[in-house]
Image (cartoon, rainbow, N blue to C red; front, top):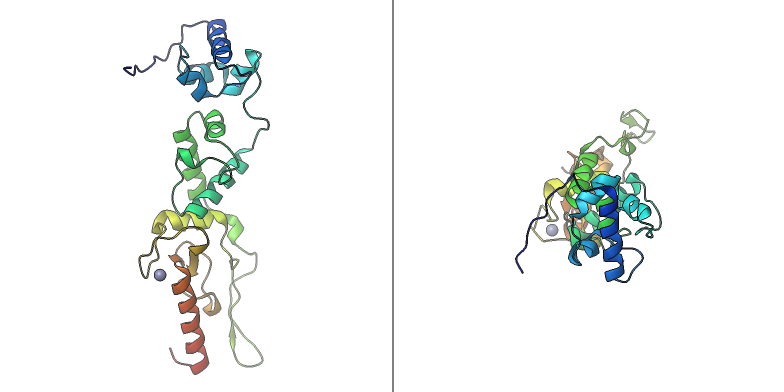
Length: 233
Ligand SMILES: [Zn+2]
């Protein structure tokens, strides 16, 4: 069958769109249908036409007297948080097919109905990630102090553990590749290393973080330990 791109048609009356929605629901024998089900079972219009007309896919379903596809409405924050978690687990940009349980809490159609399309959802997410994340910062001022043993004690202006958002920013820049050995990493193997060590006053910032494998992150820790114990640089 030849694929024909469906027209975006503003002249179709609302009730015709809703009737077609009901017709396809009967064909698939379900009281709730997703945009994909609608389109792949002979829906006459593009799901986007319907979505735009009624504000959201779920609204159209509601007006057609059908059940909503999603039982709860996730907030944008939850939807973004979910993408962050998947991105960190995979080490790379999640694609459409990654939005499945158990990896994802929400389906790709949830994103489509919230943002208009999957692509738009990812664009909104990238914009969100690139915005400044205040949660990495402590209120405290950064100033090293000398303690009673004459050691320099660093006070940090950032928290030691990077936020999920900062981790994704670093992954976007470095990819899921150890900067020292080039190993491709996923999930637990991705270590976010402080380039200037935390113990030497290095901050948890985009500039001071890098992706390392577990081995190299730990090796770096040892090195630091040796240097500190011998007093050598
Ligand atoms: Zn490595």
